[in-house]
Amino acid sequence: MASINAVPLTEQSKKPELLDPKSLTKIYLNGKYEDVDLAVKYAQEAFYGPWSKLTGLQRTECFHRLAALLEDELVPVLSPDSSTSGNPVSIIPTREKT
Image 1: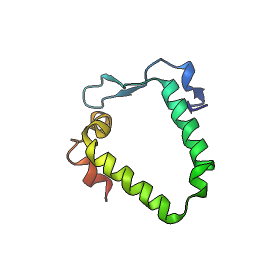
Image 2: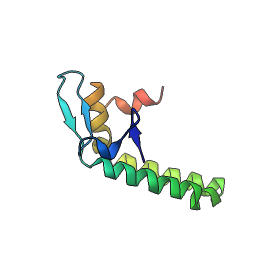
Image 3: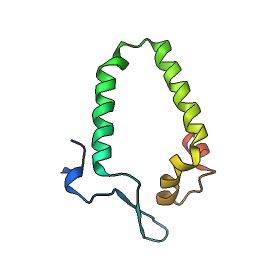
Image 4: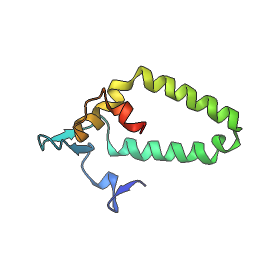
């Protein structure tokens, strides 16, 4: 089970929250801690299952497809990071490349 500071996520509030450093207001994310638990579970199953059997070329193709999907959905993916870091969405991709 996923945890933050050794407290299982399912025992914390129902919706994950982040703190906006500029306004010091809480930002509630779409989803629940149970969603995080499921994502971790499925990622581990894939990593130790099908992913471990893929060749390097097949893994590369998967990452290229993921990159294309992320480009299409860049603003929704980066918005929580923007809200908590104070950086505009437009500079986050360049910040990560350094």
